[in-house]
Amino acid sequence: DFDRALELNPKNAIAYNARGTARRRGGDMDTAIRDYRLAIEFDPKFFLPYLNRGAAFFSKQNWGTALVDLRKCVELAPNHYLVQTLIWLVRVQLEDKATADRELTNFVARQKDPNGFVAIQARFLLRKSSERDLLNAAKTPGEKSSAYYLLGEMRLLAGDRGTAKSYFEKCVANKHIASIEYDLAAKELSSMQ
Image 1 (cartoon, helix red, strand yellow):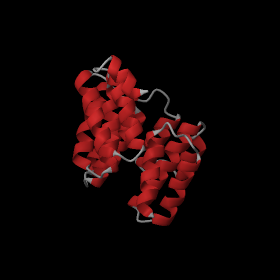
Image 2 (cartoon, rainbow, N blue to C red; image 1 turned 120 degrees about the horizontal axis):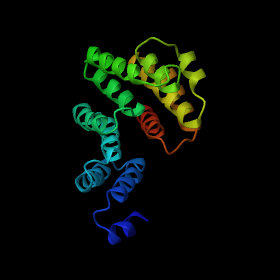
Image 3 (cartoon, rainbow, N blue to C red; image 1 turned 60 degrees about the vertical axis):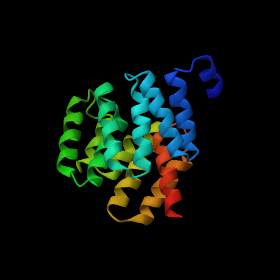
Image 4 (cartoon, helix red, strand yellow; image 1 turned 180 degrees about the vertical axis):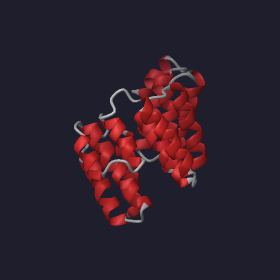
């Protein structure tokens, strides 16, 4: 129980982050963002609240603010695949694809496994691997959720709402509910209703 943990330690950044995530999943973005702010205030080196708050701002299509949080997250966790993916998507929304591609190319160059899922996912965004490559590389439930979500976002960017919806449905049906991708896919599906 998050509230109980916060009663015992009102400066518990992990509890604020977890409660914020529960609230974000419940659709209460503003309260979630407040919890993430408190988590950051009490532990500014904890990267997850930046990622989660960035995802909340991403859900609200508040691209500039999402980018600020995601960039801070990169400082704290430079090899986190989801942060790089969300930054790329935000930059594309902000019509700064050249910077998006340059940052992602640098991220791919730092990957230890050039044939691993994270590298293939990044190459897919850079248009250097196919949908089939991405889906074949996704082995775990988390990777599958990530692939389906990303394919949905790319289809949305291309104006193909029908296929995007199908990929978001696959992401949600995969039931990897612990992932931000699951939350973002559910939010996209809700907005398509």
